[in-house]
Length: 132
Ligand code: THU
Image: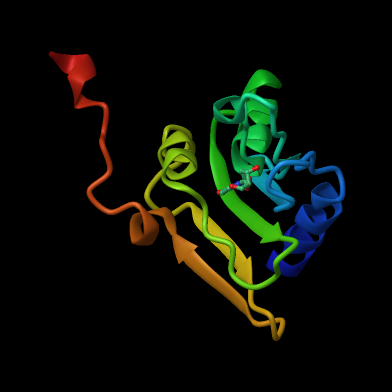
């Protein structure tokens, strides 16, 4: 699965975005360590805080199907250009990745940009509390 293919999966998922309040449609495509792709879109709610981002939709689909190791995620939005994930999604995805998980973005001119989770979530909360 190359990065352009993953971006294309994300674009397809974006078509299912339910975003009547923000009108900001997002799509994500997540690759797991065995090569399975899970896609997601944002799903808004009239109680705004209940909204779920595209990235977490994809992650929850993967985990609920038994996949807990993520290697890559591509993210696109209707606005076009680099669509960086929100802080909650960065933290959520870090639970199921190592520091090399790749985030794939597409610029308005079609340039593909990749960042590791270490780049975009430095000094992450690491769950050491579990050893207390
Ligand atoms: N959104 C995502 O789906 N992913 C992000 O990383 C940031 C924001 C959605 C949530 C909401 O439906 C809309 O974009 C506007 O915030």
